[in-house]
Length: 398
Image: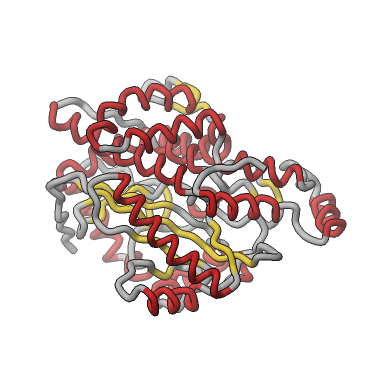
């Protein structure tokens, strides 16, 4: 197997954002994506919206753009199509890293051979993948640049994950994690950190092994956190939880776009790109998923540490000239808003807490007692909040 990287002469941008449908009363997930897609195809036959793994989910997929504002305008138009279809079906549009109380074993999978194969292969863990994410593609001009940039981006993986973290609860319980999606997703054999490779030739050898052993035949592709998308000539960053509003989405897309361009510029100057030991990247991913915006992360090969908020503040200064050049300075400033106002997991946890949700490590019988007394999970309040944020296009509080 030989994988040819198409390359992109410009730092083009593409974004994929997964959203789901929820019941207006119970706030449980509703498997109506196929029906919604029929409505969208009726009214907009040239749309790019796609089905996803779960029958309750659609994926917004942009065209190829040069700027974050253009990509966000594209997503906004697609979101309006989905909202209109949801209105006809009497459901709401919602997104977060995971649903706080709907159970994985109760979800229908979309009718697609590769999705069925994933379930057949991964069994119970595959059934738990009621998770949603953001994928950002940035064009890179040649294959020899791909892995130096990916390894540099891994240094910033905890920054991107902490900013987007929006999955604090699972099966109606507070997990104590900012991104429980991250812990769930890593159970799949093809998900997780990229392999510890340094150049295109090593990646080719890795992929040849995956092909020969049948891994790719089973899954369709490798679902690693950052990967080459060879046919598009892009690096695809898949680290982030899905967020509930376009303001935070734009901030994460802008940060990703600027980081790839920053590291590509460094290669042009002949500068050494940052990288860390595999075990440091793995530890940082866990710390960001556990502590979110309060994570103390490892920042270099000498194992020095910083608070992720402080490191983000300095990173924004470094990236400011690139953001001006790329036309996304306003969107990148949204990162500072998350630093100051908190990420999605924090808002969800506060909303559920006000509704009576117990903190992590609470006894299961106490959690069930609260649900029995109220007649529903207090995490309904977190879904309500995310639905309202989707409508408003910005983070809200309470």
